[in-house]
Image: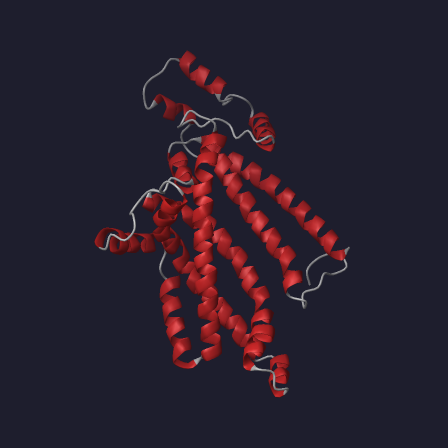
Length: 319
């Protein structure tokens, strides 16, 4: 019951935060200079009647609160509006592009989890020269922004060696995996270094704990000590970092998709922002915020299940 109350409270908090975020997302676009009408007219002069028709079509003359409530109601019914740039439903644009972005994030997350956890574990367990080498490698990785990694990977593996395509998302799952390999690596590089260093620190702290010393004194094999007592007790820290990693992936995909001309929602957001395509920007921004909140909610709910030391207080809060 304690966990159920905690889950319901966190879900209610997420819904309230998402409602606030929707107001900010909707209002922020109207604070930026320019207007959709100026983009549609492409700098051409127009009669007052033509401008009035554009404003009426996109409800630009309605009061702010009326526009917001109409937009929010349409969002809740799955209607994201009509793109000003592409002259089609935003939901259709998202349906065409979102799978590519999700596949890219999934590939990058797999690489981060596999290599980051492995490097962090090796550095903590072996120490010495191995630990130093991992620290140097991860420092370089953390200091390399995603867009820089994208340029370097393109120049080496796409242009110079010709092993992978330099742009596009491909057709069919096999071709898409090949096209998205370099973008996934560009996304993952910085986060591999982050996860490896966090894993290393958490495991080193667990290695110095009293229960590990007791387990070793009882003759428990070292592999079991590492697996059951060290790595397991580090999972809460690693899981918390994992939520931050997923959120970072969703943001950095905008730069990487643009660099590789992938055509996912990241590149779509960049184009929509530059053309003042209000409905598209608002829909994508709200989706990113919602995904960010869902990831953090799942992390909060998983922490007490992963680490028995984390308990839920009388009000359902993690303690």
